[in-house]
Image (tube, rainbow, N blue to C red; front, side, top):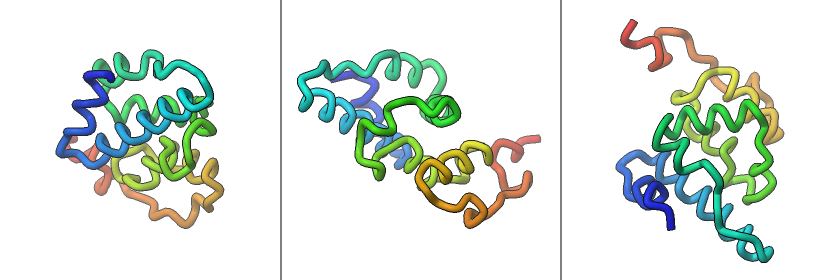
Amino acid sequence: MSKVLDELAASADDLEKDLARALRAYQDTKAEKGGSRRIGYEPRDIRKLGAVTVIESRVRKQSSGFDGVPSHLSYEAIVLSYPDRFADDVVAIAAERMGQEAHLLERRTESQNPRFASL
């Protein structure tokens, strides 16, 4: 098991715990199909860039892992569970991919967005 996944699972941050669950579900799905449990560069990227940045990147690129886990464990589901932690475009992409109406999600203003709080 990846040390990064263990750290995410033990994190006080619920988003990181959800990410660990998603990645472990992906490993399990691959193993059930006879594949390797490897998750590529995900642990390295998470350690280097952080969970939110990695999730945003994968959702923007519409990475193939979406179909590798139950939808409620996908990166898109994580984004929709913590919309205030992600850029608006990522939330819209996730909502569309999950089959939800993006306009139903509350639009955040710059003052509500934590990315602008220190400016």
